[in-house]
Image (cartoon, rainbow, N blue to C red; front, side, top):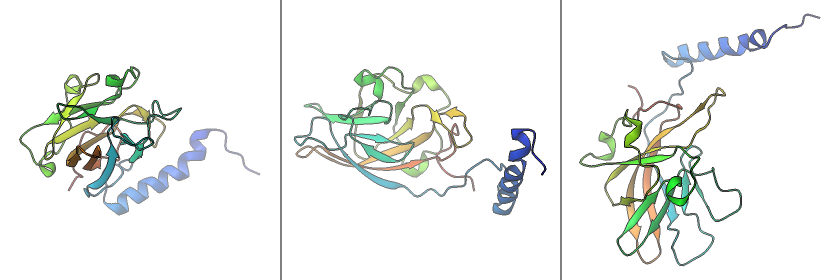
Length: 192
């Protein structure tokens, strides 16, 4: 029986299949995941909402609401939401004392959701450690925490969100969002 002497030889058929699939799909980069810009709708509640045990954070990597009050939730979410007498806020982990997260947010004024086509190139514009005012109709760009990508490399994902409803009586935050599935890629609309 023939044995393969290295992991590279074992992965060669899989790599060939991926290249072939990328060629058939018309992709220039066989490692780029194709996607269609179809914003999803999410619903979470503020940390100060009157009812316990409701999700008050969102994981943009896995696209799911998260209850951050449960043990082990640290490091599994990118943005939390809260409100006070001033208004609603989006909170990166650093604003809640989680200092080992790279998740950040930046507010984009003057552009519609579809017009925000990429995340800012400058990493220092992302707010990591304080609340950012949340307003209906405004677009926000999110850089996620670092996670391991599809091919085993650590990276961040980029997303955009736009609040659709902020309910002061229930603490409800409903927003549209879209996430680029390619880690490290700052594009917020798919290539043509």
